[in-house]
Image (cartoon, rainbow, N blue to C red; front, side, top):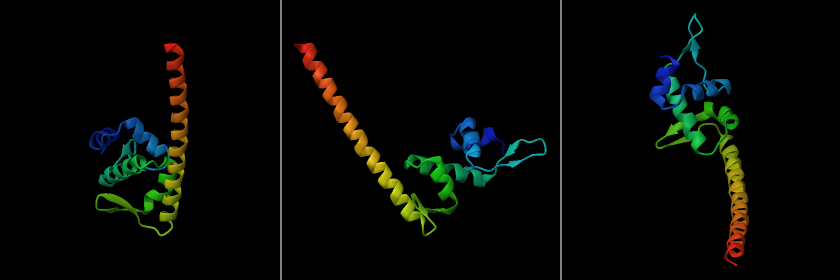
Length: 121
């Protein structure tokens, strides 16, 4: 299938598919004329990429772990032993970012409250 059909089947834009290819996440075949050619396995690869992106992982990390991910019912699971530690480190990174965002939100809330008090006076 061509890139347009893959985009339609996965709900991902052709621009995004080209980005995945640029990042090494998607490796289509090529025709003699240089057109990208995708197979059924690429539909599955795009699905896995989307799941990992939704889990908060960046494309660099996804590039490292994608070959080792396996389907385990509703979720993907790490099929290589060392991936659990890497995924736990990513979760800690996300937890740290959440804490930072809470602090930022708290500061912004204080500024808003101060502004409301000032305008009410």
